[in-house]
Length: 339
Image 1 (cartoon, one colour):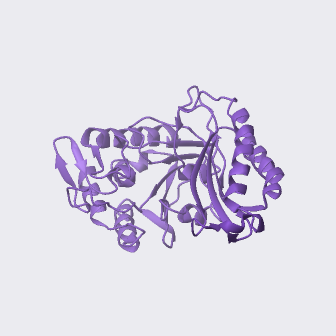
Image 2 (cartoon, one colour):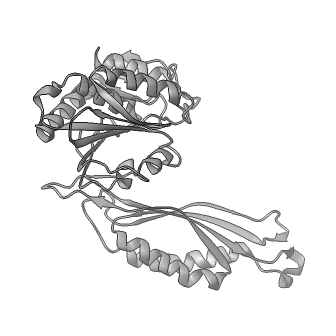
């Protein structure tokens, strides 16, 4: 069995919104059982480990994919080879990483190693992180964790945090010809934004050059309000996304929102609050996206996967060279940490 053949089989499973979750987990489980791994936990997640080994290292991969859009020119659930390219839904994000994890395990002589590994396969990473949220309720992860998200074979050991907020502003509806009888919720939303952005621009002066964008970012992702051009809107909803360079920024952002929100007749709900992290090494290389690594409390967390990095795009692919290199990188990590 080759890593390319494993990837070919993984791509066949339609795991958009976890549709064939049972089938893909059964496939993974059977491969690992051939190397005497035991199943420790199985729901829509799967945890397996070696018998009679202390687990010093863990590998993690999510099995779900995004929806294949109409721009695909190949069949998404079939691995297509075009020269160096291996094209298929999830090849990059992140069935390529899972294939490399499985192949590295198959090619390792575990009898010659003192320590074992634990492997984790999750679901619903693309939307709500439900799988990893399920596991962190009870699982103590090994000190060393490898997450197989696409990195183009670059080891990454740091990630920004995430703060996602939905804000709702209340007004009073009235006909636009009787403007004085109403209160415009959209104007309240804009008032809040104008005042908050003055504060935010001071916050972004703090820099961390370990990140490609070296400051905490703020994205106004969506605004929804009003029903008609001639009616004063009585409600406006606002969604904001922050990518955090320093966990202290989360608290100061929320503190400023608390200070302003009542002034503009608003309320808010935190949709996601995920800490940034840095695994201290000689060199810090940071991701621009959130992965399941952000939820894990292991001492040493690394994100390492195939490339090029092109997730969520039509005709998603990785290269054969990158995939084979990733197998060797995983084997080196196993030999180094589990010896």
